[in-house]
Image (cartoon, rainbow, N blue to C red; front, top):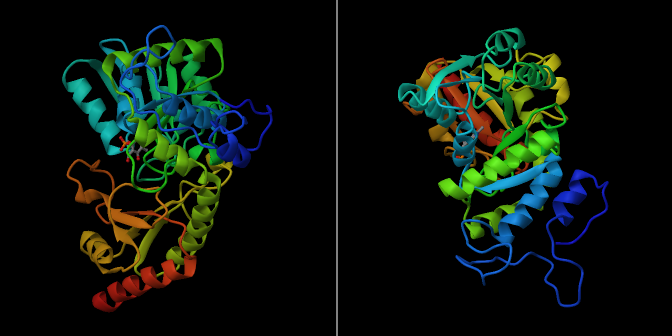
Length: 382
Ligand code: PLP
């Protein structure tokens, strides 16, 4: 891989890291290496142990987060591997409004006795999280949370978690390393669903973990790499190649998506069909406050609660022409869904909450589509 100067801005890193050396006839892009096995005697040996395409992806993500990255089969495979670090009967502190797959894994592992306890907390209530920490082996933060968009005070929680003797992992899927770098805030591990903004084109399922560039981080990285190998939670080379290609424009996509989200959040807050807008940067949102200062911008995800309950939310998702009714998020196209349509969504997520993933289209086209559908809700209820 090509050596780079040490101090590069994130936008230069996304474009230049993880590329072959500048040599005559070398390809500009890392090749897609499809190999289950390699000629014996080298460092790679077998396709479950190593792959040069994974390494190119890992180099870019590691550079952006400021640590050492490992790619996994999916975001949930990465989270499962972190949970696997917890001793049998151990204690995990996690947000009550984390991604439903994370909350689901914690519930299953607690029911089976694999974990002793999962202490679910309001991650924006720093004191409550601290009170839950004594005896914990893992503090698994997600910030902003999916889909409630609560923001955690990362520096305070990371310091408190470390003091309590726990490993601190932060799911940075919503913010991306361009808006927030948890390792700088003191986290041990960063978690990603690379399926979302990192890959960015709704065509890949992929996960990643990034560990701190410290002796403790290196130890964790060795352990997590060994677990990936043993459990086999490895990514496909093509998925990693696609995600790497997607990451080349991460800075442009995130910038546009954030700018669109700010405009839409403000317009949504003024619309009579909308009861509440959750967007961390919005002054009227309760998530707004001290903790948001650690973010460079507030991301491309908004949640709205509709007047008229679940029926109004469902009607909205059926009416638009540009906004696509679909799960997942972080793609170039704008998508949305009523989260409680999933029976497994946490019961304290409001029934009328629609999570919106703001894409990179023209913001006025997005608003025209959305406001036409919202106006119809008002006409119907009036
Ligand atoms: N973490 C967060 C915050 C997510 O939103 C998701 C998926 O929606 C995941 C983890 C799981 O990732 P994946 O779907 O790639 O397994």
